[in-house]
Image (cartoon, rainbow, N blue to C red):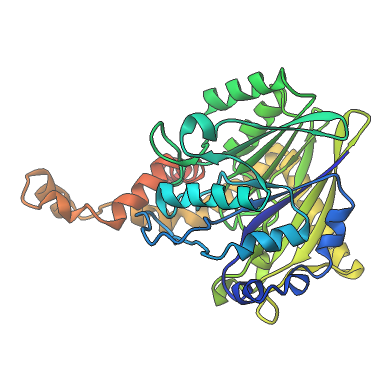
Length: 376
């Protein structure tokens, strides 16, 4: 059994015109042939498909596409399942989430990770593939996307609830895959807590874990003989000019190949969203050599605790100025005036509050904030 999993598909930027023109072969450039060789294919749909104009208030951009041709493109490529637990699925509120799910169904796609309520969003996806019952649990970190009892959205990280879902699913399936949307954007390693929680999921029943969200590829490890792929990077996500180079444009898909009752990983690297060409391009053989050297270097860091924490602390130093600038109100007179009621509460009720909420609530931002504050 071979299951392919791809990262963030966001049909915006220059690719929007290619999709509008239905020139799908030039968008995927042969990747569809890779998909034909597997038994089941999964991709993360990184934005809602909706005509709603009611964007939510959040940090970062609200993104969407109105064109269902984005789904026709994924049909062309051969994908079967859309993961929806991500930090953009709720960018246009409950309507955007529900519109996306309904459109996906119209095009014959199965979905997991988001729904009209938390009760339904947390439901795993179960599929018999080549006679093997496979369960997929899709989780996102808590960034302005969570479903509630009365609001559509994504199934988000909650260690106790996720643990219970894994335990329940373990009894229903032969193989269990967790697909996780989280980690620190533009950082090529997992955070210490992310590495710890993924290993915990393996210890308690997951057979493989694959992550995305960071907009750059990471390494992988076999933990208890089971693979953890820490980030796939972008699949197709053309964005601002400053991102049309570097790690944003380098991604990979992973094929989970079931052999001797355990999954092994095969990486399919590609370029996308580059300044001269926004489309996906599979790496040539000479390019693959450099790519896999980078993967090997990341893998060595991931499994070596001393190296891993050294890299993490070095990264915290690079983030210190930015995070502290948002976390502190440094002027004591402003603080004192606010506490005395001389400044109205609306003085601090602005976008800055949403930044602080994200730092406190989102697992990766919280971990970075905590680490920086501990070190200063």
